[in-house]
Structures are given as C-alpha cells and as structure tokens.
Amino acid sequence: MSEATPETRTRGAWLLLAGAALGLAMASFGLLEPKIDPSLLPEDAAAVVGERKIRRVDYERVLSGVAGDLRSPIDDAMRRRVLDRMIDEELLVQRALSLGLAGIDRRVRGELTSSMIDSIVSEVDSTEPDSDQIADHYEENVDFFTRPGRLQAQRIYFSPRRDESDPRGPATERAAAALVRLQAGDAPDTVEDDLADRQVSPVPNTMLPPGKVRDYVGPSLLTALMQLETGIWSEPTESNGSYHILRVLDREPSVVPTLEEIESLVRQDLKRRRGDDALRAYLESLKAETPIAIDERLFETTEAPRGEAAISS
Image (cartoon, rainbow, N blue to C red; front, side):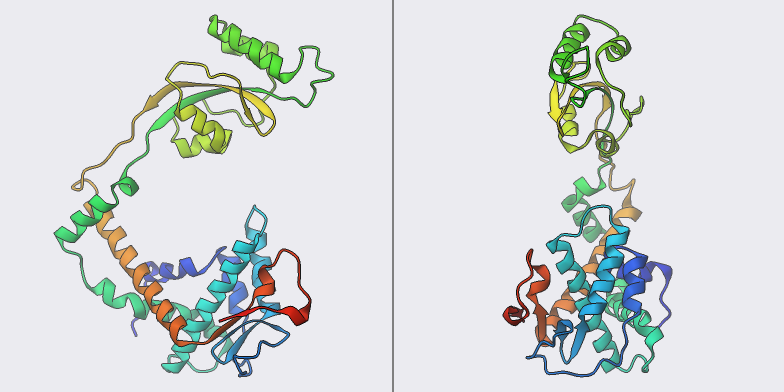
C-alpha cells in the first residue's frame, strides 16, 4: 500500500467529531480486547462490534475529550454520533486486521484507520473526472460554489436589565423613542448616546459576509437584516430579551463564478465527495455484515436501571 499523502490523510477527518481530542482518545484503545458473544452486552461495554466490545470507560473518555473541544453542551445526538464514529473506527480496524495490514501493536490503531480509508478511496482518486462530469457537478452544486454577498449593517441595542432604575425609562420605551428620532433624521451616534446601551461586540463598520454578521448579531437578527431595504431602520426587534434597531447601510449581491473560473476547485470538490461516498458505502457494507449491539441507555435523558437496558443491533 502506498504512503498516504497529506491530502488523503485528511479524508479521515469526518470520522472525528472534535479534532485532536477525539483522535488521541481513540488512539488509547487496545487491540487486545477479549472476544465476547455479541448477543450479550457486558456491564462495562458501551457497544459490541462483531466479537469485540467498545468499553464504556473508553467511550466516556472520548466523550470527555469532545466536550472539552466543543463550546456547546453535549446532547444525546452528539453522544450517539461519538459512539457511531467509534463503531466506524472499530469496523475499519477489524477489517484492516483481517487483511493483515498490521501486527498487534497499540500504537498503530490510528494508522490502520487511515490506511483503510486510503485503500477504499484510492480507486476513486485514480480516476480523473471528465469535463461532462465536472460540468454536471458544478450545475448540481452551484449554490455551494456561489460566493455570498456582503452587507454593511448597523445595530442600536437596548437592554432591559436596568429598567427599574434607568432614569431614561424601560428598554421598550427607549427603543420606540430612538426609532422616532432616527426616522426624523437625528444622528445615530447621538441617539445611541442618549437612549441606548453599550454593545460588547458592535458590528464592524465595514462590508461583511452574512455569516460573519451573524457572529455579531445572532441568527434571528440576521434574518431581520436580510429582509430590510437598504437605508431603512427596522422596528424595535426583540432578541434574547433585549431590543434592537437595525439598518443595512450598504449591500453587495452574491456572485456566481463561471465554471471556467473555478474548474480546478469543482474538480477537487467532486473527487473529495466521491471519496466520501465510497467510504460511507464501504462502512455501510461492513455494518450490514457485522453484528453490532449498543447500550441504548447511553442516550436516555434519565438513566434507566441497569436491568432495563435496551439493546439494538
């Protein structure tokens, strides 16, 4: 098997949910797990794949690593995705071992997975897409290749946290009064100084893609901004308990590049997706051939008694 290039090694990234943390945790698994009857789920197992178990302690270690990398809380869907990726890895490792790709060595588990992925997609990589396939991929995914437009936005912010003690009045009243003054032509800076509250992260006074504007105002206010006519102040809009007056100062439309401009990018994306599809299909075939048992209690909001485990296969 040929040595994996940096490009092919990145194909394993979809197996990881949180970069290095997950990879390092998975690398700590041993290859010498005792073989067990897949019809019986041991107390210490999170899942059984074929004749091997994924230990609960290893699953919790991986989950802890993912939680450390993610900013949002771990929910049941994420817990299941972590176990699904561990099952995928176990399937690939078992297949690699059955093919004699490596001896028994704790240090090579990560390399086994990468080697299996490389072997699965190598045939796809070796076949260059022709011009018709590239054109079809471009047409089918033109939205993906479209460069988003940009907009320059402005927000004035009103917080209700000091409504009872603020001599200027409640946030709702201040927002309404501010809109009247803005529509009458008062300078936004003056209105903001008189009636609004300081913003921790104001929207930069420059043209930005919508996705970047969302980082500053959130999804609901971005939706309101996208519906505004340029230069028109919005009505006071509530979001997360606060009130906001919004305006689009300027905007640029989205740009759809021609195929000729981005042909190399389209070719690269088509090959990447072919590799992903080949890998998914291979894993699905392994799952269909291999008995898998999962402790469904791992995904329950409230833990059920140990004697009431639901096992799916």
